[in-house]
Image 1 (cartoon, rainbow, N blue to C red):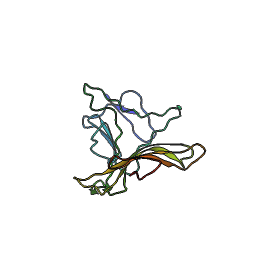
Image 2 (image 1 turned 45 degrees about the vertical axis):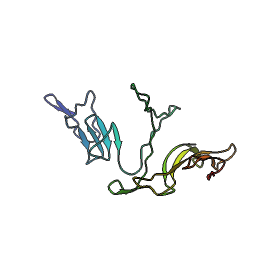
Image 3 (image 1 turned 90 degrees about the horizontal axis):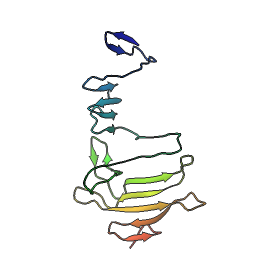
Image 4 (image 1 turned 90 degrees about the vertical axis):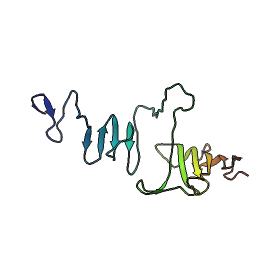
Length: 174
């Protein structure tokens, strides 16, 4: 670590520093858009993070720990009862720059649970498009999938179709 007056900086890869790292007012950019800290937001793969954490590009976010407990919290505080913590899965076809509406059969979002050591079975809740979507039509169904004891094949346990009909043990309730 070298210093020039009150300015401290890291000279090369492998150097370390301690203490506070003061960033310029316009943030910090590592590479073109690998990591961007700007206006209190963190962006990975984007030069303009739109929220506290904004990840753009292939893959997703992966959180692992060896503490024996893994949590994802979505805490909300306020005076209205309308909104609580939410997980929102959204789907479009195409690319970020040129997207189109989902089509019938597209999985729109899921909340799934699986064995991290042998992920050959999963259970959870899935939302699926039941028609080709546009701005004016967006039919969807919700299904709950389970895996019976002693097995690794998932079963569609409960389905609520686009008309609100409920099927138990069938993916096509009447």
